[in-house]
Length: 341
Image (cartoon, rainbow, N blue to C red; front, side, top):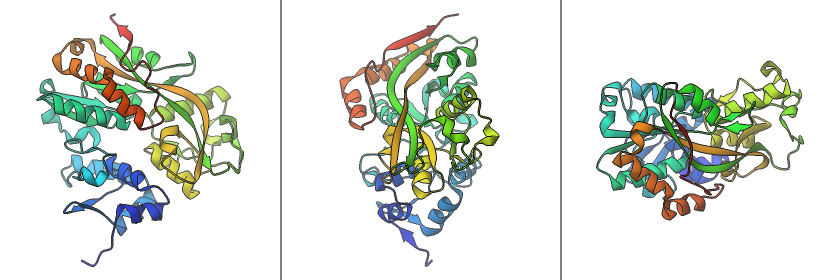
């Protein structure tokens, strides 16, 4: 009783981000929220906790959920202003599915990856089929590993391979041995540096990361951005221990952008799409990345998966994704690699 409750708009003003950014943070489990009727409210102490500890909150919430100590947020679809979709069971790791439930994976499809276009896909697929469609929010490397472990049916990745200057296939071919796979292209996104408005420290390349006056905020191991950072530092011959802030980790593009906006870091790496959600920062282009989907060949011709592919290739879905901004949907759904060893 007597605790202060904030609206999404009020939380956004405190964080100096847009309201939709707050909704996305809640959707990903980075910020806790509750419903009062159809209204979304955030406790002041939860917001203060997020400001102090950042991504640790999301990890703590996921741990509590897996131990049965809390319940997934149930955010009203209208409250998210149609920008964030309410996928069944919420945005938790493995979508709240425990090991007992995973035994029934033959009757489910679990789509793994962090981009919101997968939420749109899961929502459309849920509307088309009688089977349950769930979401897991593991990053690229961890998504492929989860697929190898049999924890998810579909994985997505945007992993840059420095030695070949290519995306995904070198990792996919080595991380899922003994598995026949089909890889579909989803989209291309621009990756770059998030810097403070006007780029006051003139950050232009990864070489700047070794400067003593530069502090970065990093991404979690296994994410596509973390792999990109580590590969670029390796190529530049920069030891990670010489990079200020290398051990300061956040778990999403938006959180990285917000850290730069708050002045907690001078630079972060992320997609152009998410930089548009955070006023007060600039985006410096590095390279275009390929975001691709991995399906087991044994599943590829099953009705559920063919329906998913049909949705991906549909003009309606592609138009919806392109309408979000920051996505190049050319060749979406095209098969780019088949492993039949």
